[in-house]
Length: 209
Image (cartoon, helix red, strand yellow):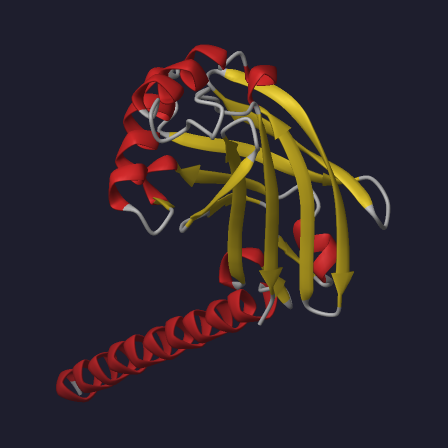
């Protein structure tokens, strides 16, 4: 009789262990499904994000084009629509990702422009859409946060914004002067005057998958 009781206890224990493992597996599968279901249709981090800028040199205002090749979405950035994903998204842009197709120029911008600023390894901010055509970014650079107004369009899965940034609004005139000194001869026009302009044009596009 004791052997029978002992065998029943063992069988019951094994059955309980199998049952627990089965339940744990079901819970894991359910959790994975919930996470998958929670992902929104539009995810800004997964979009193709392109950040183009145009600065200007010489008194003739000759354009100098470049890009930032990396952007990280640090908060928000997801939604059931593209507009919802963009609105209130927070971002950071490493200044080390600057690219102008001229490595010497890239080095000078990093060292003599951003390197002069206070704590500016990253440009960071938050995008706010005010209506269907305008918005602003709370942009932080040189330990200064200012509103950068922009106009935007949204066509299907493609978002595009245009803005003009005045460097002096971020208390960075000394950084601009530093860059102009480093590029003095390269920023001279036909009149012999070396000039680096304060305004920078921005065009940012995000194409969602």
